Length: 411
Image (tube, rainbow, N blue to C red):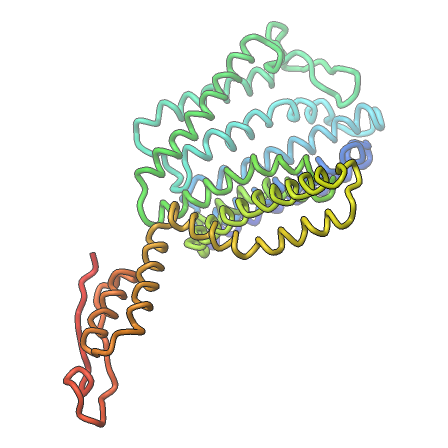
């Protein structure tokens, strides 16, 4: 049974790789790849991540619909891209050189609507279990399916198809009364409905998170973290081209990767540390960046104006100020984040610090043993704990002569 799903996943992956390679070759021949290399690379990496993660989930968790959805997203996107490049090559680059060009142009006209619906509606509705939050959400899923099917049919039945150049091709199954859904009133209404359904789908993620416990909550943390990182990756536009493109690629690729980690449960609980570090270093970067800019501005104004090229000593002074503030600021931000978002760790740290302070003055072994067990109970919350002491050769107290065994019951 397991081998069958591995073969299915491998076959889908092979179709994707062939589509990607042939589509890229045709894009290079048509010149579309060279026109926007960064966008083409983003498409390659982003949808490759969806395909690889989807295939892994299908191979190991075939009952989870998310694996099939991710695989469908990647396959539809790249077979659609291949069809579009095939049509452009047959109609524009070398007219009449390839058979079936009109079929390729027709296929390229509609898969993207399905891709958007699968990625932005059905993924949040079904993640992480592959099932809806409750039967009450079935009307939302049915409405999303009906809207997606309708707009896809309208796209497939539009009277004219895009050839990849200036000319339009008559759709052999087109209907004159059907307009392009991207410009028609009916299409606009359906697209608005899909946007509303996207919002409702993400509301279901919030509700699922509030009701979740233990492992499912950790899974949703991965998905939410990736969802927050994705819009932040748009800030890459403010950075130089190579760095900005890299930031954007990481944001796009991380969404399917995070979902795969959550579903396959690989190092699931590392997400808490990842979120903690992101908050700390994100706030630290913003703070030190503000301090650096403020120091340059203030020093420049005090000593004759900054201008476009501030004096080197001003830059050096601001840099040294930021370097001196790094560790103290990081520690304070770490404590603030722990106090607000990781209260258990913060309380445990405070408990250990208080015990360490008392430890220097405590001389009674029995009292110290009881306090140590109490600290372990408060910080680690074990089901049962024992304290074993090495027997003393000097015949001291009973606790020191034998082993002190004190059971604790977790809360």
